[in-house]
Amino acid sequence: MDEHIRRRRGYSYYLVNIDCLRTSTLFNVVMDLEASIEDLLPYLAGCLPGCNYVHGSNVIDFMDAGHIVGIYPLRITITGVEGDEEAERLCSGYFDSIEEVREKRETLTPVYDRRTTLTLLDILHALPRTNCGACSSPSCMAFAARVFRREAPVSDCPPFLDVLAKHRDLLREMRAHAYEVPEDPP
Image: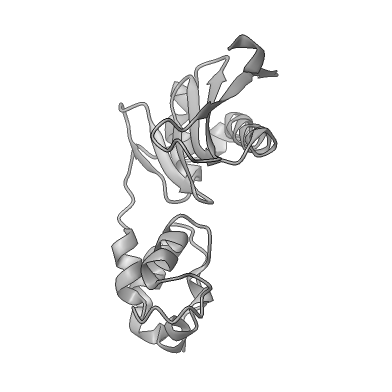
């Protein structure tokens, strides 16, 4: 197992097969940090869009481009990674973000309680639910899941764009969670 561990400055990582999906070609990544970031968690929570964090729980979780990410004091876990190249890029990016927060900590406002209030169903209910395929997804449910996982912007649904004014509250909520959304109509 040790030969599969990739060591970098400040962390190491390895890929794990997704046991519950035997035919999957995707992996999960386990990234072990050399130093605890427990004291940085409230600051990271303030910088990570759409994350969930309750102080004292010692975990931040969020969706990032289709990956479920968990940040713990000494470990980061990332789901659905295609291989070593993507794992390397993601691990390096998260480690750089941690280091940036560490450097800028004094200028950041910590967040001690943040919960995502937006759900996949909130997005689905705003879509036309006609399964027209204009978004290149097989169904509105599949498209809502892609939007929720931050794999596609909600603006990829032309019928949704036709009724933007009807969904101002949803757009505001999505914007608050740093989703890519179209501008509010006049």
